[in-house]
Length: 268
Image (cartoon, rainbow, N blue to C red; front, side, top):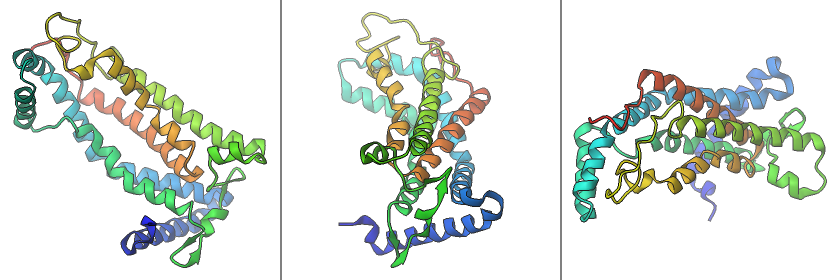
């Protein structure tokens, strides 16, 4: 079953196509052959600007969770033999503070429909029974519907195509590394990790297993998920990811100054 054949989704896809085509035509006198790529960049910036309130809420939630860390550690010590009571008490604490452990996922979830539409626009040769003129648009001579994975397996791709597609993925990976370093314990966006205490039955400072070294490595690796995705999506969607990871990194730096994380070793 083709999800994009459903009437509601097909209508949204056609609307996204027409909006991108209209913006592309508007930008053509300024950007020439790169007008469609610039249109994708502008759409990304508009989406991210609309999500600024969500980013502020996320920063506030992260600061609140850091402030609550000692109290959560105390709950874990108190209920270490009763996981259900620990979960209930932890969720009640978050509810009393007006936050949630999942608040950080909101920006990613809010963008998912936009990324999906941009992806779909550049992989369908026909949209709403008409041809897809966007597939003929390029950036530095590379079609916006090209993928790095397809270029590597095609066998006949030129070096310039590989350079452009590879550069997009590389820059996304670099931003992922910057973000990983910034949010890691002791980094610019996170307080230093508290020392390990015996008998807590969890991790550093009696924290939940999520604070363990193994999970920290997993969370660090997740910062590179966008680079992996960019290898398989069309160049247009890769541009969206490129702009959004830079925006996210810069926004987190600015908001962390406004809402600094409390030292988790200090009692709340």
